[in-house]
Image 1 (cartoon, helix red, strand yellow):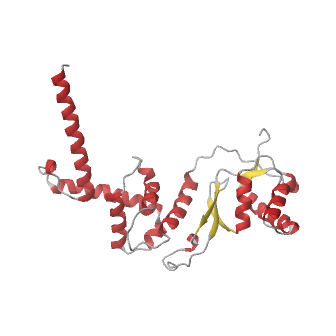
Image 2 (cartoon, helix red, strand yellow):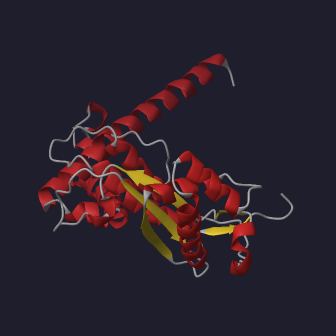
Image 3 (cartoon, helix red, strand yellow):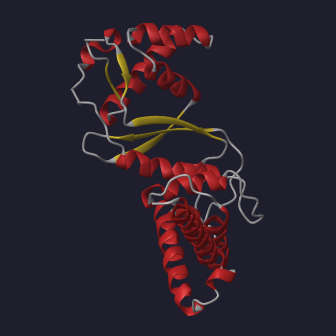
Length: 259
C-alpha cells in the first residue's frame, strides 16, 4: 500500500470517527448535525428512544426509592440530564448504576434533595452486595470460646456512614433531618441481602474486626474500651452480644489459621 492509499485510509477513518461522534451526540441531544442531515429524523428518533429507555430502565431498577421521590417530569429530566451530560468511563450496561452515582456527585439540578447521592449510594450498596462474588468459604463459629477467637469481617459485609438516615427515606418520609447514621450491609450464607443499623461503637468494632489478623476478641474489646474511655465490663458484655448477633447474620468469620 503506497503513501497515497494510506492517506486515504487515514482520512476515511477520521471521517468515520467524526460521524460516530456526531451520531452519538444526535442520539443523546436531538441536536441536528450537518453530516447527518440526510438521515431522516424519524429513523434517528427510534435509536434515540431505544437508548434512553434502556438507560432509564437500568437506573429505575437500581434506584427505586430515589425514583419514587420525583414526579414523572422531574425523573425524566434527571435521567435525561445524566444521559446527555455524563461521560461514562465504562461501556458496560451493568455498570450504568455506578456511573449514575458518579453523576449525582457533580450534578447541579436544583430540584434534587441534598441527600440524593447518599440515598443512591445506599440503594446501590444493596445491589452491590447481591451480586458480589465472594471467595470465602463459610464455617461455623464456636460461640462457647468467643472471647478467645480471632475474628474478622466477611467479604460480603460492609459498614457505612451517611449524613442522613438513608434507610428510612421514602415518599412519605422525604424530608429527613440531617443525622449521622451508621449501617451495615451483608449477604448471608443463604445469599440473602440484609442490613442493620449500628451505633458508633459498633461501627468502630466493625472497623477493628475488618483489619484484624491476630488479636482475640477480648483484646479488641479491651482496646476499644480504652480508646473510648468506657467501662471495660460494659464494653465486653455489650460487644459480645453484638458479635453473637453478627455471627448469626454471617457478618463475621474466623481468621484462617494459616494467617
